[in-house]
Length: 415
Image (cartoon, rainbow, N blue to C red; front, side, top):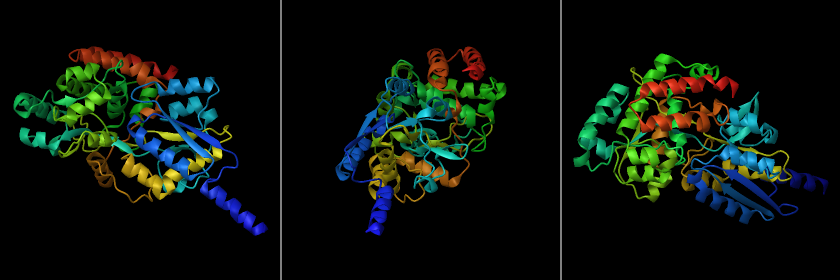
């Protein structure tokens, strides 16, 4: 009898206590709006198959102040059982509410867990990435070979050519990009595009540029090249989308064949599927330098953390483990949410063209790291985003953009 009890106890720990002794509700707070429906469905399925356990997911994203909302929940004594952080900046803010997950069964199956001093504190939501997405059919009609888009000069020539053929190609603009703070699209420019300056053209794990910025300094020569690339994107972007557009506006313009390029990552695959896109697409590099850049930007964009002070911490850990280590969880990640899993044992392949392009790039190597998570909490949204918004309104004033960014970087050491 004692042996049976021990076996049952071990099974309960491994399986995450499928039957809760008393009913519990796991509250999850996350920010990826594009996976909301898929995650809600998986949470409902998990709840239905684990008597006594209910998983409730709250999603706040699309440019909203997720970090501020999480702070408010903590101040109100409503700390979620599972929540998201996007890097060291947020870890430093919320570390008192983040459990050590080093003993979890999925840890050995990933290289992208969030770690501090050798301990694991975050479950990688997915592998994400981006370049400048392109409509292959439009580029072919325009006479542009995407394989040649490896320098800023190549982009200048290609954008000008496509722009000259907008009418015959049925385009509203060359690029679909949004940068509006008021529209909640600040992250496109102030996180993902700025990441090109931090890591573009460097070895994947080279953080020298952002570490210099954290000391208050810009690399003037490098930043000038980067600023010219931003100026180019803004010049050829759909003005209404750039200044006022939402996420849906930006993606829809590309999906409808109204722009040749889209400044978004592979997370748009489910949206493009919903919009009925059938044309061929791929990724070209964000090549802002004078020297060739051929890589894409790959990273774990965010991590799930567990509140160690919650009485439901064990059940919360079990729910996360189920995502990584069960057929149902892996199906959710790949087939339902359209994500690239960060776990090596997952054999399923994403169907989205942009996710497939990332996987091919990952296999080739020579890609670039994404380091905006190293910035102080709120730097992207509150410090850099208004500067990009202002530059979008007047792309000719590149000197002002450079000056503003230099002043902003100088404030980072004291944030």
